[in-house]
Image 1 (cartoon, helix red, strand yellow):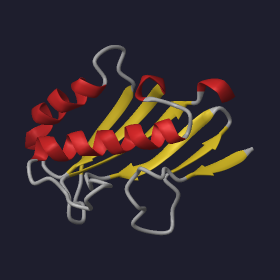
Image 2 (tube, one colour):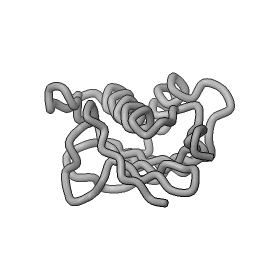
Image 3 (cartoon, helix red, strand yellow):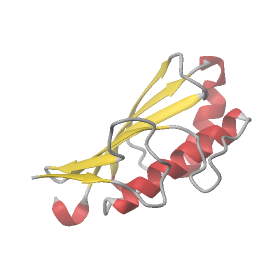
Image 4 (cartoon, helix red, strand yellow):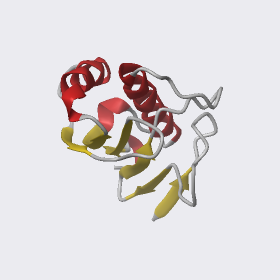
Length: 126
């Protein structure tokens, strides 16, 4: 079984992809950036971009019947790895205990400083 998810309160996808796909008891969330879905604006500060990106992931996970507590794997893409400590500080606000497995890489992104995708369990479907 495969179900696509579009979160009504999430940021509009910037291309031909779904916010997430649920399959096999897991939700696979597409890479999200820091666009505020209510205003369409993007914060200037790096920490605020990380925070908004994680809020966007949270919104999509909830639309799929999951949550940040169910995340098992995160991939994070950051334009400036000298901000790694700042990234970790904000990240720990959302994953304060038993954090998921994570990969963080430096990359070039179009228009924003961070992008994050994740995989989470969907409890009622597991």
